[in-house]
Amino acid sequence: MKNLEKLSLLNISKSFFIKDKKIDVLNDVNLDVSPGEFVSIIGPSGCGKSTLLKLIIGLSSQTAGSILLGGHELQYSTHDIGIVFQEARLFPWLSVYKNITFGLENKQLSEDDKNDVQKHIKLVGLESFADAYPSQLSGGMQQRVSIARALISHPKVLLLDEPFGALDAITRIHMQQEITRIWQTEKSTILLVTHDIDEAIFLSDRVIVMSNRPATIKKIIPVELPRPRDRNGYDFLLLRK
Ligand code: ADP
Ligand code: MG
Image (cartoon, rainbow, N blue to C red; front, side):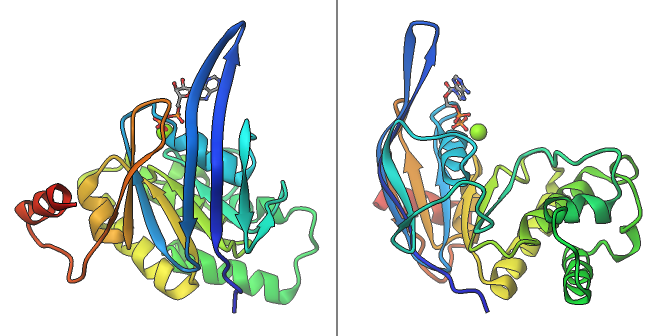
C-alpha cells in the first residue's frame, strides 16, 4: 500500500525570461493537497496551469517558493509524481508494453514487476493491445497507454494536464469514469487541469480557480456531495462561493 503524503505548494512564483523581457506567470501560489485528495485546477488559457504542473514534476523550476511532499522538498527524477499530458506523447516506434515500461528501463524487471505491468495494461483495458504500436490505436487508447505509463511507478501524486481535451465526447466520459476508478483503486493524490467546469466538479473534491496571469489562486471551491446533477446546479454552486 502506498504511503500517501500531503503535497504543499508554498509561495510559488515563476517567471520566464525571453531575451531581456521578464514574463511573470505564477505569483505566490499557495496550496495544500491532502493525501488521496482529487483536486481540479481551472483558469484562463495561458495563465500558468501547465507551468504549475511542470514545476511539480520537475520539468521546470520555480523562481521562488518550495514544493513539498510529506514535508520534504521534492527531488528531481522522483518516481513519486506521474504526469499525463493532453496528447499521449508515446514513442511511435515502441509497442504499448514498451511504452509503459520505458521509465523502468534501467531496472531488471522481476516476475512481480512484469505482473504489475500486466495489471496496469488491464487496468486501462488494453489487454489485447500490449504488442500493438501507437499508430494502431485510437486517440483514447493512446491516452490510456499514457495513463498506464504514468501509473506504473506507483506515483503518490498523479498530474493530469487536460488529459481528455483532445478526445471525443463519448471517449471522454469513458476516460473520466476510468480515472475515477483508478483514483479509487490505486489511491493516488490527483491534480487535474481542465477547462471543463463540469468535469472538474464531477470528478474532484475541490476546484481551484486560478486568476489571469500572473496567476494566483483566486478561489477554492469545495465540491459538495451529492454532486449537482444539472447545469443550473453547477452555476449555483459557482456563484454562491
Ligand atoms: P496554461 O496551461 O494555463 O494554458 P501555460 O502554463 O502553458 O498556461 O503558460 C503560461 C504562460 O507561460 C504563457 O504565457 C506561456 O507563453 C508562458 N510559457 C510557458 N512555458 C514557457 C517557456 N518555456 N518559456 C517562455 N514562456 C513560457
Ligand atoms: Mg496548459
